[in-house]
Image (cartoon, rainbow, N blue to C red; front, top):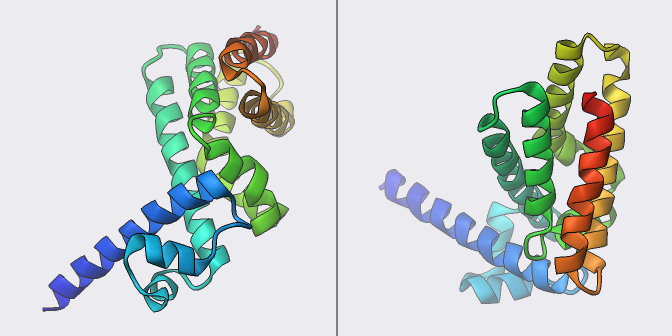
Length: 195
């Protein structure tokens, strides 16, 4: 019986997370209550609190889930390339596309810093996406024999530039115009790093 209970609990937690992801993405953190999530997931409010200790805890789980998905996409794109510079470029472009898909940028770049606090938001980003950016930049610097003392500064600056580019795409009147421009600008930045 415990196995069945654990499986049911895991399915419930997964359903709550999926529903919360949709609601937070479409309506924003401020306009979603735990009751909204429970009702949409077809569970009790107590079930939501059983799996996620608070609305902020649920939102943190959503942010971590979205960041993990983005990290998986950028790693897959980078791994398909054969040189450090090509891996950096492919992963960076994959990040920009993944974070601007749907309303992901709203959750991760607009609501998360306010709802979770800047330090927690930075931790989530650093543990999932930024760590791969740092590794790719480190490989590029090592291959070119460049000064590795700039690694941390390059990582945070390129990460910040890509996050702002994602916001710019998401808030642009016509994202289909903004996306290729953001990618072209990203290539210019990467050219400076990979020379």
